[in-house]
Length: 423
Image (cartoon, rainbow, N blue to C red; front, side):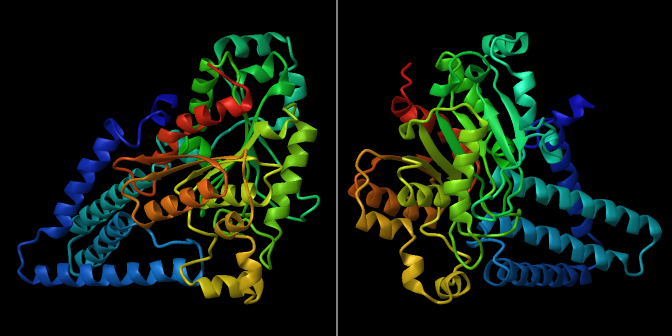
């Protein structure tokens, strides 16, 4: 079973099997000795384009499941899947049961192929095991399982292997109800002076879940590698939920939607300080995120530099949003009060405040369209306001977790001197 779960979704036997099956399924659905079938293909394609366009509009502009338009590649593969569904329905009309069965199998193959390609674009799931979540222990078990000097702690210290746990972080001050957080504890947490360990708080994209940092962001591997280079020391990483569900969008603000900012700036730091043994030095704290999470990270540092003096923004948005209609965003979150909204956006805050002594790391996919310009504008504004800025571009990447995977090691090394870590 473990060998099956370890199969790669981005390369290898499982990937190529689905790819070949999807191509064969597409061929079966498309090829038929009937000229009228060309009309069916045309109708299926037009219907699929229409359905995808309507669903995309609903998800972005009405339901605000996505704050930005979905990438073109993703829309194309969604259209392929819906076209296959339409062709399946045509195949079912007046066909023998064998043809219907073959058409059904072919549709499933095309559907899996489309899902595989969409996942390949976003880079969220790398193995079959990633699809089933992370079965890790809860944080209260730490006191018994990881006492300094215990045999297990010494073994983890020597192996340069950190551990991952889950925990519920209550919104005592904010009243915010977040999903479970995930916590990475570096090897040094299990032996040595924990009070000197830096802290990195990470936010996922939207829609998204804190565990996305473990699957798409490969954060455990990145931290273990960093620890191996720094004598077992790496940040204690707390991956938290800023939205309350996979599809909600609080914009990381205190607004009519919820008190997300209070949760992230008061409840989360208090919980970390009361539950974990970490550095109390503000300079050793940082915050980061991907996409929506990258925007959220900038918000935390520009609003609360005394709590999170450094940030990492991977593929962040220009400003928080519920969709492309800014006026609608302001209306829903602030009752139409644009000044209240503007007062909380990083670009406006960086015009009004000085951030000398603070640091920000930006990275974006070179093929990520408007997000490339967002990163350039934000990085320039950050430099002007006093931030020590590093700005990176990932060749060939779009709006993908590949940006975080490739540039997280660089971001950690950029912040290492601020954490007192020198190789």
